[in-house]
View 1 (cartoon, helix red, strand yellow):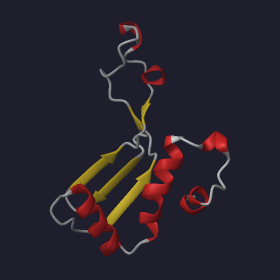
View 2 (cartoon, rainbow, N blue to C red):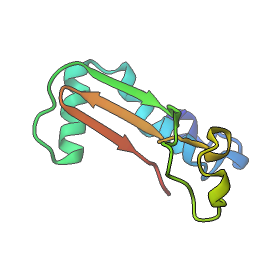
View 3 (spheres, helix red, strand yellow):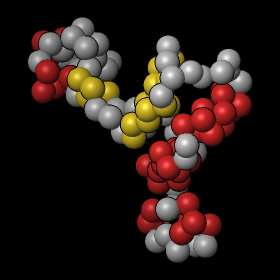
View 4 (cartoon, one colour):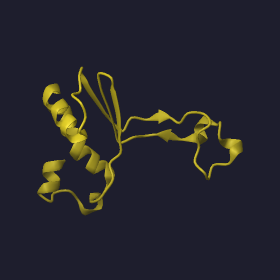
Length: 106
């Protein structure tokens, strides 16, 4: 997707979409050797060296925990799982003791 974006091959209706940004930035990490991906993420995050196998998930969905709800949700519905919605970070990375949730924004 990144190459298509750079060559202006992506339709204009996709311009500015955060999922396209997430795919372009984090997607290539899945194809790099773990060592190189860890080095890039370590430098980007200005963190200590990441250890262990690198695992990256794009757009994983997790049920919102009971008791957490948005300010517009009526209290009577807060414990109804179907009404709580899901938490969907753009990317989740684990490596050794690290768990990193990432949200892409323009």
